[in-house]
Length: 207
Image (cartoon, rainbow, N blue to C red; front, top):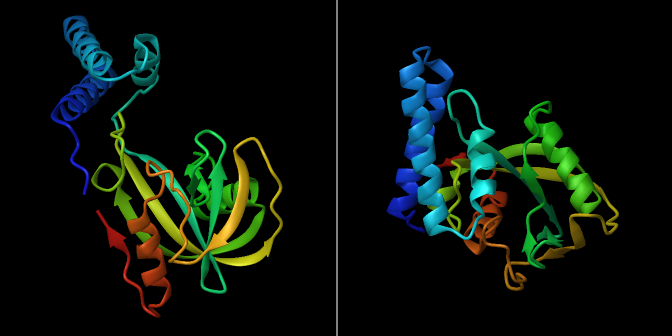
């Protein structure tokens, strides 16, 4: 289990504190203090990452209200005891189809959308396998808190076409996983998916 560096923990806590304070405070002096706290969190991120300061500021300043985790959805699709993976154009590595959840779609709708766009797969979401805290399972560290939701889906049809996000899609067995995009999907997570497939009454894994 990867350990999140202390500097990132501090930056995220300061950012969350500042974001909530700016949302709920009315006193102009308190608002100034929370803005200063936000600046400190940006400086920490700037000193310890390769991200440009302006990008970090936009990343943090764009968030309003009480800070909550972002949602990353992953469609787990099997065929003949093989799992469907897609090859990301951004890094040339493989992952489960999925991505950020759109706010105007339900969990099932998000999964159906991602599977169709990235893998050319028509699916029917079936059951939740796991809801994982990304910082406990994936690298590298991320400025945001993220929940990753893995959902087993029934495959209705498969017709992949290259698109703006993925260059390939294929099914793999447990002995032949390709090079994985570990920030999105790990070997341990794929193993978890295979293990759940063989359980008639699977209990959702979380944390």
